[in-house]
Image (spheres, rainbow, N blue to C red):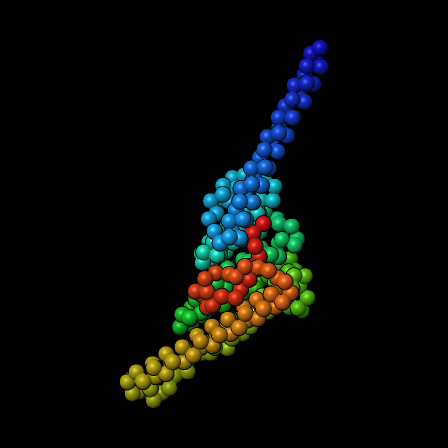
Length: 245
């Protein structure tokens, strides 16, 4: 009798564990479903998803990905980048890995204020961020230098970033000093340099806007269906991020 009782106890314990796991998955599903529904209706409150970080299995990358989307839509691009970076640490599946990388690269680009790149230090910092975004897309083959990355949106974004890097590099030549201006000391060259910087800023901003708009148009023509990114405060909108899961 005792062995049979022990067998029943084990079966009951297993049943209770399965029931608890089922309840856990159900709660997780409804929290995530409510968040996605609210997000699609323009409500980016991610309190529920934040709770899921403590219930972080299976697919532990999902809550961080969704939190990144919410932060991005609210214009909190640094926070968005942090969440997307965290999502990548949970080994997302192949197709979803590239989507997270696209959103991370876009968030990094939006941390750059292209309207205020008025000195060499800021330009160098912007280049570091652009290269970081570029490298993010290049990992795991989402994009490559040959133009054959296995995710077309990642490849297009990488090429857009390459254009921004090229423009930014060309617009920042070594400073040329005019001996006459130095001798006169009347500050006349300052206005010219200021105007030159302003022209560079405008050129960079226009190039970024055009590249992002071209990318958005291409996605729209192919049914890419993402939501419009950000509030346009960092050099204009037009970037498309993938929706939450």
